[in-house]
Image 1 (cartoon, rainbow, N blue to C red):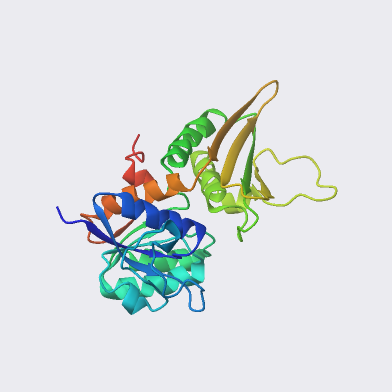
Image 2 (tube, helix red, strand yellow):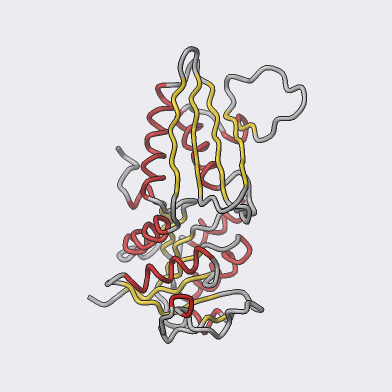
Length: 270
């Protein structure tokens, strides 16, 4: 079986490097491209330099050069960059695994439109553990629909640029859907001053940013006399990278369509 030919966007970033290492170590994948923004100090370096390995794959800022041999692009960058990459991949038939967060509605619609032509897996978190947690939250929400206040607390490193995290928002969407609510209508994202009593139908969000926290998420179901907390904590980005390769393998026999990690794990109908 021929290895999957994979390119990595954001090649010199923390997640990009973890993805490169994971692709190099997997038996069924081959690194064929490494992409970074123009002006990056890493442009021209071998993609494996940070590991002390020679891969023969230079880090490029030119999409045509970086993606000329790619069948898949794994992209954990920023919305504006991912959408530029999306246009190229759509035109050239390159499948995408998108872990970028912070898209507005127009960006999400653009991804959905491109998925009519190419296969795309789009998820705010590629961790298997997080996605199983999503299923647990769906079940919990249905049973805690009355008499329980719901709060989502997330923590990430100081460099993260969007808040709440894409994972926290997805958790909120899963819970709201299970309760027959619209997160845009019931989500509470800020509290300050005299706020009045809590609206029992709301889903609250709290954000922490500091240090090198990879990603912690806790959903609190607070009732009278008891509370239930469902928590996922990431100790390493390797779980995101391993999940991304699992997602890439899932796309192997897909010509087009928009998928997420719930599809990969077979959790949507369970």
